Length: 81
Image 1 (cartoon, rainbow, N blue to C red):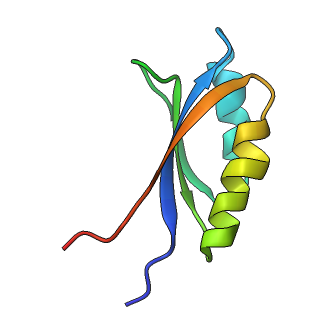
Image 2 (cartoon, one colour):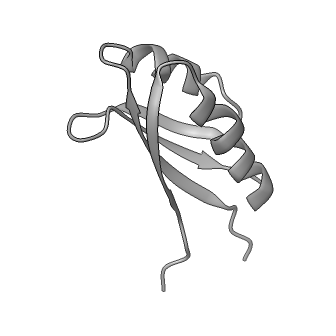
């Protein structure tokens, strides 16, 4: 059984720009879910791609470079047993 590489990305935005970053995420390929959240982080997104290289590229070349993104925490998923 093939499992696509995936990751959850927690994002801190500039104050007041959570909705703008959420809109950008929803237009980005490989983002399968995205939400504004309350707590330490402002936005959470799930990223899925065909390859680990595409997954990493989406995170480093897209999400981390969005205007108004201050920082991110990425959690790459592994299969559970």
